[in-house]
Structures are given as C-alpha cells and as structure tokens.
Length: 341
Image (cartoon, rainbow, N blue to C red; front, side, top):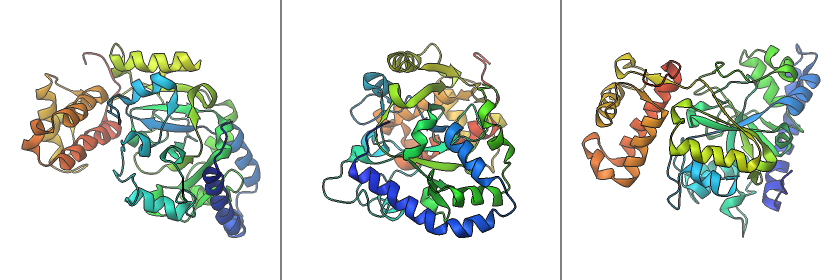
C-alpha cells in the first residue's frame, strides 16, 4: 500500500468523520437492507475502482498519457498532467480546487502541499463494466486492486455537484443508502466475489457513477490489476505505450469491445445540433466514414498542436467541448468496434 502524506491522511480522516456523523441517519435509510454491513464488507474486499483516461491526450511535458504511464508507471492527477476530461479547473483557485477545499476539509490547502499529493479521480465499478465505471472520462482505464479501496474517499455522484452522501470504506453507510435510494441493484454487490471480466459487458455510464478519489501515489506495479483499453488503439503507438506500461508493471493489458459510430447515426438532441456536423467534419478531415476513440484523439491532439486549424468551429475551448461531445456520443450510442467497419 502506498504511504500516505499528512495531507492524504487528513483528507481521508475528514471524509470519514463527516460520514460517521451521518451514519445513524444512513442506517435508518437502510432499514430495509438487513445485510447492509455484509454488503459493505463485500464492496471493501471485492470492489474495484477504475481510473478512466484517454491514452492519447497530450499531458504537460509533451508526452501522451500512455507514454507517461510507460515512462515511470505512475498514474497522475489532473493537477500534474494538465488534462481534464471533465472540468478544466484543476489549479489553485480553480473550481476543482474549491470543490476539494470543501470536500476534504482544506486538507490539500496547507503550506507545502504538492500538486502530486492531490487525489486521482475514478469511480467504483460495482457493475464490473468492461468500459470502466466512468467511461465519460476516457476510453481506457486502470483497474485498481481492492487493497486500494481503503485509501479512497467516495461521493455518490460527481463531487463537483457537492453530493450529500460521501464516505470511505471505514464509513460507507451513507453511500450505500444513496445507492439503494437511487434504485440500484444490490445483486451486483452480492455477486462481486465471483465476478469476472466480460469484454462485451459495457456499462456506457456517463453520469450516474459512484465517484472515487484515490489518495496517495498510484503505482501500477503495486496498485493495479490491469490496463483495459479500447481496441481501436491496436496497432498504434498508443498500444505500444500501454503494452510497455503493463509489461513493466507486471499486469495485463486487456481490451473491451470498444465503440464506433457514423455521424449519420447521431442524435441531434443528445449533445446539441452542432455535434453531428462537427463529427462529419472530423471524419472528412481524416478520411474516415466513422469515428472511434482513436479518431477523436487525433482531433484532440491536433487542437493542442495547431489550434488555428480549428478556428472555423469556434474558439479553442468550444472546439474542445465539441470533441468531448463526440466521445460522449460514442459511449452512449456507439456499436462494438470493428476494424474497417
């Protein structure tokens, strides 16, 4: 297990304290779940946090995320990489910084706290989904070992919303209460001990995830079971980098079924009327009839390297949002990836 810095330990202690104060009310909310304590034990022992990421995005320093993983086997926070697949506000004084100030009781706002100490964001994959618990944030994911659960804090739904139900493995009752009240199935929790990896069992989760914040260093060789990737990256430099990262860490590189979609199959109402013509333009730019995670990544890289070439679609931040919408649409509606489909 990773050593925790004083800031890491303080963040965990703060959230545990808040959750313990809410535990009596949470147990009342769970009065119709007589095996709640057993279920929490199963989650602690067998639940896996997944860290979804886009492997081909360019991080601070010019390496892609996959190349950075291959370089030293460390999974870094958005404060270190400069990349966010959600809110681009992971800097001192930004929105993410403010949310963390509240959630973690100012644990990361003391003198001398480093960016490297900030938490890494993922989600608890109780459904065992092959595309990870929160594919909204990336086509690939690192599947962590259950031992990491004890240094995670959790929020039921995204932390930027300021959710009421928060906790840790030492005080999980509010989270389980929120999960039950949201109508989630407890059978997936009861089935956790025998769950395996099914590459076709994608969850397509864009919003309703149980967010996890991992405190301390994430070292693939110690903390991870596998890297799970989209098959559209097979045969690319991204695959080579992910394969090196996995091999160096002594873990598996496995593949889920992936997503691919034609612009003509997009829904104008899902992410707005601008998204389908933008998808068609991206496909035309790269000589493709359909788009997948790799093609979306090429557009994202091009926006970083030559933002002026995208000026016809609006300011850089607006184009970045359109690129994100393409990925969201793939998750929601994409069919299983087939090469040359």
